[in-house]
Image (tube, rainbow, N blue to C red; front, side, top):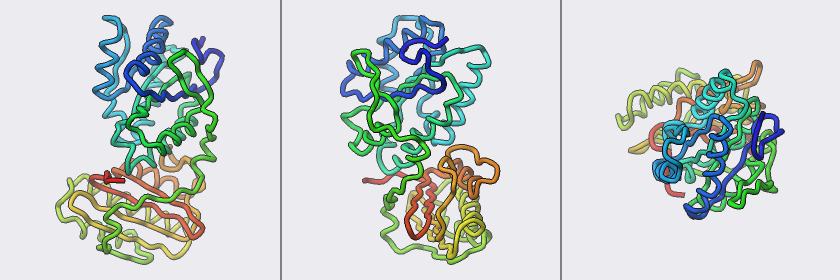
Length: 320
């Protein structure tokens, strides 16, 4: 039987915490965790080091709360979804009727890579809905930009507050709609420089060769190999499922290689493509799924003239 605010709810009960002080955060998190422990529910924390220490100090000694390695869990959206689904499946197999998790993203994700974490926050409303999960995602309003906080409100059905209330965010948007909305792509600064490579309708072999040629030893070998695979899959999808012309453009910097692949088509028809395993028959889904696991950042853009996918190997962070 489910307990607390999620009592009687079927599937994923997804909430946000918009906190502006340590006291605010603890006022929401401690009752959530202690009630979970009291009810014999798996109760987990996926915070960064600072807030992990804060919660550890505040909990009674010996509390059976599990602390996850937050930095490892949230390395990439697809990895986070895969890890959490495995974890949730294991708890359900052991008989858990509700699982409680409170977590947070690294502040580094609020910058140039926020687009794919916003997609993650939306997609998990669907990805975790087959589990009796109640989770709270904590966002520090002192450091998270206004645009990030707006996306958080749109991707979380409810907000958990210090007074114990759980209120609708008021702007929650169903995942299929949210993920299908056209959004401008934030340009990487390297894209203001002349590209190293420009190819029209390249074969996958030509695309792979171009990435290898652009590598000047600035990235780990594994990162380059992963980018080669992702670019090859992306070009293959564009040629097979997109519309002519397919244009591949590559930029190289000291700390990263950036590749853009564009075609005149509408892009994948599955709004969850990239974040969840491709479903049978989904055009372009497998390649995007591979790319999300292979690259340090994947950005996408749909506009009236076509679909663009940008793949980054190396450091994807830049000032915004």
